[in-house]
Amino acid sequence: MSTYKKLANATAIIALTLLAACGDEEAPSGPKYNYERADSLPTGYLEELGIIKTNIEVSAKLYEDMNAAGYSYNESILLPASKSFSGSSKQAIGIGAMGSDMVFTGAFDQTQGAMSRMEGLLKTASDLGIAEAFDQELMEQMASDDSTINKSVLLTKAYLNAKDQLFSDERAQFATFMVIGGWIEGLHICTQMTKDNLANADIRLGVWSVCNAYSNVMHMCKVFESNAEMQKIAEELKSIEGPLNAVKKKPKKFSTEDVAALAEAVSAIRGKLY
Image (cartoon, rainbow, N blue to C red):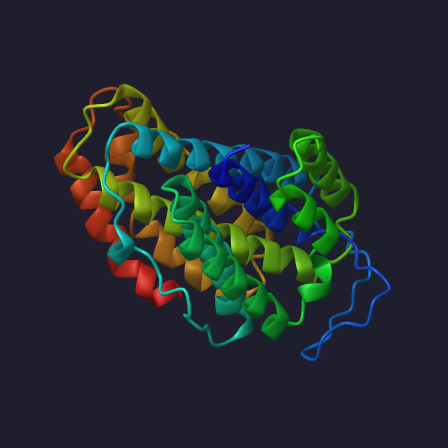
């Protein structure tokens, strides 16, 4: 399995095991949370997580297609590997954003950059006090060179485990912030990379698919209407709805000008979000 695929799978596991139950190991220093079961989450929330899982895979495939099609790697559009985030919501958003950057660097065979971003991601998780949510052994298996390990089975296992163990309303909020960060960073990457070049049909479809996840992200935000920070972010996301719909409504005909307009709109809110 290529380094890219290992990192893509590891990132999917990071996104999904954030919802998994904690083990018995001592948690690192940082804020502690009450993981009592929350009955307030609607049943549709888990289905939305299933769609988001698919979107993680779509974004990873898009980056791989870009590399194969001859797109040039662009470090300047990414967050610095050493970037820090202040406040719990921005830390959770940062975990998702760093995960997107990690997959992108891995897809372009930038192994050192990918691993440094994984280190930054895990440090942020520790700062947030949720490092115990990550299955370190599973992640190590996913990133190993052992060809006898069925990585797809492990990914499915991690995903089902996360679905079955959504015990905390607050943890689900962190997961939603992380989804927002991963999606907006992925949208930023794909629009910056393609605003001058949409000749490849597979890449065009990939960009459209990333844009099409907007409604799922907004639905997850709506679940937590009582969270003022979440709703503030949702309002920011609404500001890109116009240029985003220009792409969504024309899957085969949107232009580089449409993508450039969306790229500018995304850049305008990216700094505000994280």
